[in-house]
Amino acid sequence: MSRFRSQSVFGATRAILWPRRIRRPLRQFHKLALQRIERHTSRWRAVPCCHVVKLALAMNSTAIDFATPGNPTEATSSAIIQVRDLVHRYANRTALNGVSFDVRPAELFGLLGPNGSGKTTLFRILSTLMIPTSGSAMVAGLDAVREPGALRRRIGVVFQAQSVDTKLTAHENLWHQGHLYGLHGAQLNMRIDEILARVGLLDRAADRVETFSGGMQRRIELAKGLLHHPEVLLLDEPTTGLDPGARRDLWQYLGILRDQEHVSVIVTTHLMEEAERCDRLAILNEGNLVALGTPEALTREIGGDVVLLEARDPKALAAEIRDRFHVEADVLDNHVRLEIENGHRFVPDVVEAFPGDIHSLSVSKPTLEDVFIHRTGHRFWNEEPEAETTVGKDKKGKKKH
Ligand code: ADP
Image (cartoon, rainbow, N blue to C red; front, side):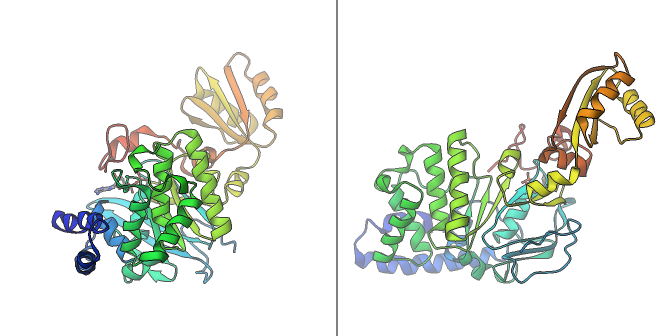
């Protein structure tokens, strides 16, 4: 693998500095090398996220909410992505357990889930970096398993790990990216200017990327992913490491991409506030699709309010509330939790019914976290299951690359 990398990445980097008589045979050489990479990667069942893969990727280069998540009513021809019964197992660990959903054209679609829920596995299958154990994933009408080469030309991919070369300028980074997709000369120059203007960095085209802020570097990553006009843009936790301002800018830009360029954007995230900005969401938990729909519809489904009561003995209080009021009352993190209509009316009644037992309480409208609790019975950030599934993660649960 390292042989390919040194031939391709560094060869391509030098190409623009060399005279034309050297560049042409060099291009031919890159093409052959990358074809070899593609032949190899299409056979790999699991491919690490590395430069070689990114190069190979580059070279190859209606309202459908299901009644039950994971059980789509019917395939729709209007969907840009169709995922059906996707299963992926790593040795004896099931990372995806029969996931099904559609993504519509020009939709901002979120894959939300805590660490270990299967987001990255799904992302890698959609971006053709991994072959699922079973099931299918169609992107822009192409099968991710059987037609990876053609599919790669139709998608842009922004990985969590940095792929820009910080020693090169913004323009140089995009120049190399363009070559990998067969763009050249004046056409490529025009497209680079266009895309740099789009991400607000045209005036920094000649500056080395190492002089950019984290947010600006992310925008160059985005520009790389978009250079070849993909119909679908896949982003893996794109705001990781960004400050709040840069996060906001990036999300604003994703909205512009959807609205003005009609790109279908699929974003993985573990952040509720980001998920709320998506048109629709697939919520994953331990490899299962636990909810699917717009953030509004998902929270509306809970109905009413969420009441949390802090008590000395929450288990006993929950049992008494169930007896007295005939409502569902669960214990979550040492609190009694109820989903109830008109929570503000229920609160005085419950306080009066159990004088002195309730130390504090809150009434709130349901959030996406409540949707997650409603569907799974536990909080989004549940440390225990993640502690058991630390493969590929550091001690804080962050992914290693
Ligand atoms: P997420 O992106 O939501 O954190 P992942 O797709 O990375 O989830 O992981 C889903 C599950 O698969 C987790 O239990 C994780 O530990 C496991 N897993 C991920 N990658 C590997 C691997 N290469 N080998 C074995 N298990 C893995």
